Length: 583
Image (cartoon, rainbow, N blue to C red):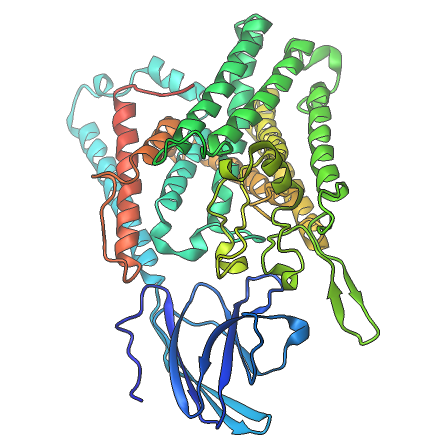
């Protein structure tokens, strides 16, 4: 057989050439490393003295194995494994691998060769980053030189400089927060439109933490921060009547929820199958709970955080005791339902399965609420999402939940179990509420401590605390990092990163003015909601997107960066026309 070629390979695919030199038929199995304690899945059979060529994804390390026999099932459980030549490989894009099997009478050997190392598919990302950096340097460097030239050759400089009053107004706004929000919305658009087809930039299939997993939590966090500033203005400065404050909170929450439902109907406006949970729906519920409790706290102490309270060093914590009761209740609700509720007879409570060792020193697995499907040697096929998914099914039924289960390719490779789990479900909202409270803490510190050093030290302390707690919970194994379930360990990671990010941006932009206004990211930051809605509605329209060759990452990356850049330009034009959309 001639050496296989890569002409028929798609992006992120590798070619495996199996050569059977034995006098009997053999069976080839495979499994991805990310699949949690999964059985091997039947791949292909190979006749005696023959060869077979198969393709496989390169987005994850691969286990392959060979057996002499095959039962009626396409899954080879760990306790049934009678295999030889089991090995792991991390193939690169367009790589070619040859595995030769020889031997007889249950005595076999395998030889693995790499015929083609493949190609480095990361270089388009590197080139794209370099191009954007170069453009930024040329633009801002050229503009700086231009203004220096004007300062030397134009006599009436003062008339060309920004008005002091307008500048003062801009300084009252936390420019670093606009920059942070702008960076986050551009990241979200880039990921939502495809992220250049890079798997590692997308969400983690189940447990774990990828680049995309930080974006939505950061928005939740930022919402909490802005909430502190806006509610303080209403309660303390403008003395808005309490009834009006709570009415506005409820109105904004319902508006966000309604917009989310409308976006869910995009492409299929069918009430019978409309997905009820969603991103903006979670924003709405989190805002309702956190804003209401914070407004109540402000009304209780009437904004008098100093003086009579005599607790200056904890003025950002103790006066808000009612809110911490709400946080404690959310934590108790989530943990009690996750770890204490036996929602199904064949599913265990919690996240992690219980293993027991029998007399033969082999481990048996008890069923557990996790990704379900073939996970845990197929012991918990119907336990996907645990208590969280059970609650969603009871409230909404399957047809009103997210149908594109992110881990289906791992845990339902033959699409036979109909696994459903909504990552924006009801139970996970309790932890998004906690994350909103953590974002609110940034605003409380900003309001309570006028000194920049005090603010930054406290933000960093909170970041260290959240990061340490996340590491402890994740390392224990009891609460894995899981975006699909919005586990406690998961929400603490983006919270920790956000505390550090806002500290750095605040220092560079608002304190030192090294990065004036956080430009150009402050433009999308001031209109993030309309950019989110716009890219959801116009995602398949020109000029925001177009068809490209999907054979490698160059075309998809160029298209997705173009889409992101187009929405950035939209945000600039909206700001130049003083158009800002809020609810």
